[in-house]
Image (cartoon, rainbow over all chains, first blue to last red; front, side, top):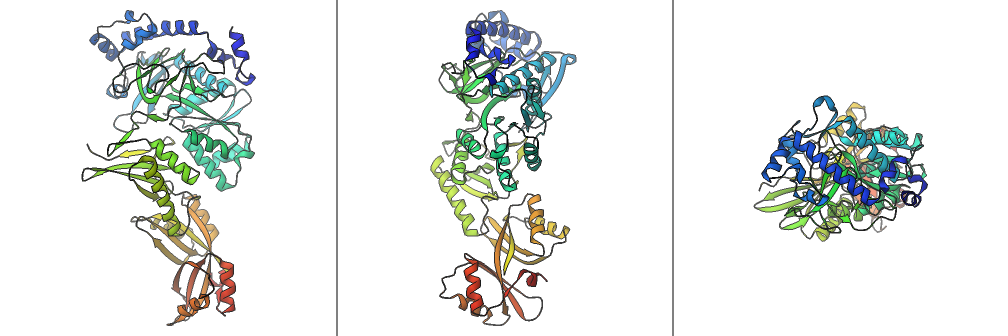
Length: 445
Length: 142
């Protein structure tokens, strides 16, 4: 049975680690139940916050008899990680912890995540499965332009790519000119980075006279921030790569929670390690497959820092059908937005992704932008700051004012509210870990 | 006849001109003419410098958005009516001036007018026919 499923896939997908992607459903569900029972027991034994929340509900680990019982468990939220900073949610003694990562905190304390040696192996294996699903294999040269260091992106992708057997070029983020030089000189076939950073590389390559379409580069694995289908089309038009969406978050493991296969119809969740649920973000009630809501994840095999029903704030849905690729793993839709991304401006719901698609339409390229919210005399004001790129710059005031007006009218039209547009100098907007910082909210409520 | 002018995008904020000025100073590049076009929120710094290629490379390396445009430099007598004579030569020709600025010549009693035309070649022909002296790059920068 398993063999048939594998035969449906392309030869490039057939890395031995990918066999897990085709686990027959009864076997997968049984494995999930066994693992969730173990992880709940582990958290109960070692994590005080979790045990006290279970106590409040009158629950004990033995109350989990089926996967449906997961819905009874208490949620974990991001502030729990901050409140217990640095090591309060660890379920392993420090002697068993081999790695710590720290997530960039936008406000207040950062969050710390921990891995045992087994956790690192699991992480590596899911990245192998991601990359194999993107059609990568031994012999590929992969440039890893995710930031190395405290951020999970760089090291996470690195170990997985090496385990796959690819040749890894660990460029980390930054220095676009050198990135482009290495892509060219090494004959790099795949790149991992944030989609925003790849857009920057596209623009910079054009300025340097490097035609990305002429390079052997054929796959891009992009994640760490939400991106849109229009960005995918733009990326695939400007280079000869196939663009894949990879999903993950430090709290769960880092990159590698889910990834697209070559069908590009949603991201397969590595369900043998991460149990997904979709809930109504307002009521916390579970929602059926095919309904959009907040993604909640439970780690099924993490030792150092188990996460039970972690609220990701990412809005998506579980897709109801099986993927044509033959994997039994359920898929989630692309993350277009986060529940905490939604801005309410003068009573109107606004998502940064709407601003992004408006900018892409006008310029045919995505400049760096930032949304700044202020409140003047009780009224919300929204300003969109757009970095002027060489492509946009014209040395006549009138032409720039015309551009500003076109952006303004496109935004007014898409958002349905009046916004201010400011053209700002290149590289003047704040970035963290290569991720653009999209929203600054200075409204005091 | 065409002179390469460097333009930079600058936000209309205190201190935003000093960084490019400092860069040119560090590189020993001389500014021959400078004009600031501004709107409410942003401005364009247009400059004619002693070494435009080096200046463009230095600015780009420091993350500035740079544009190089071709302009014409016209020499006129620095007395009343000098500008009117040059503009008179263009009247009726349908040649459109996109922008212009003027500065006094350091030597003698001449002034220099810098013009950006939509069609610089047509403008060169028209001005030369009218006997107006266009400066070459090396003459302007010497």
